[in-house]
Image 1 (cartoon, helix red, strand yellow):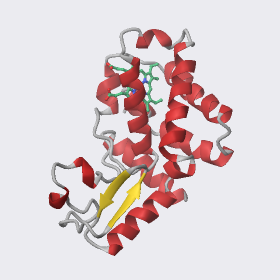
Image 2 (cartoon, helix red, strand yellow):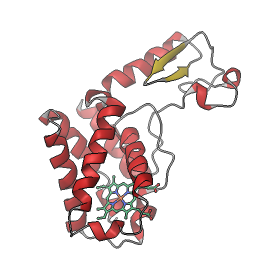
Image 3 (cartoon, rainbow, N blue to C red):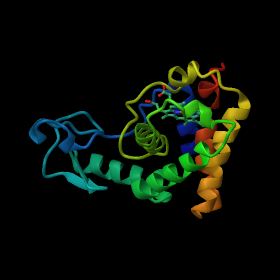
Image 4 (tube, rainbow, N blue to C red):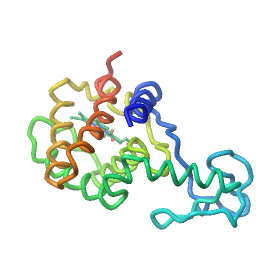
Amino acid sequence: MKNILKFIAISLISLCGFALHAAKPADAGKKAAAAKCPISGKPADPKCSVAYEGKTYTFCCGDCRKEFNEARANSLYQKIGGKAALSAAVDLFYKKVLADKLVNHFFDDVNMRRQHNKQKAFLAAALGGPEAWIGKDMRKIHANLKLKEAHFNAIAGHLLATLKELKVKPDLIDQVMAVVGSTKNAVLNRK
Ligand code: HEM
């Protein structure tokens, strides 16, 4: 488990653009027949698929499907309850953020519906969800905000409070916070 966390943290720090081991759903493409196996990159076999959170992922072979299933089962994302749980957590988290005078002004001109969706997608990828983060780089998106350590700690604190309120298991909370903490230098635009 430590190794998995280490891998996630290193990926977050070094990439901060996030191409974590994640897949695109087969039905996201124009034609299912042209889909590629998200594990090997080889042509996918429509007979070798798996449904996950309402989407179908198609692989070239059983080994790749097994790898995908194992990655999902081992992921922090799935352990905390997957899409539904993360969605509820992000919604509650932003209620807390917007009620906090230290940080809420940063979001004055931000489309919060979009922000919720982006944050859900980002955290899903960072916690080992099935789809990669294809959004902006964490350093770039926060660079102009000139954030201080206190701002980061406040945001992280609201996430921590949210997870506790939602009764996520303490060991899982620690792991989520370690992943979020690994973004700190990028968010604060530090080396
Ligand atoms: C704790 C770690 C943090 C993570 C994981 C995080 C994640 C994100 C994500 C995923 C986005 C959306 C990126 C996109 O539009 O593609 C974003 C945008 C934003 N974040 Fe953060 N963030 C963090 C910390 C902070 C802090 C500390 C602040 C301010 C107190 C902040 C303020 C903002 C604002 C204002 C935007 C919108 C920027 C814009 O649309 O121009 N974030 N953040």
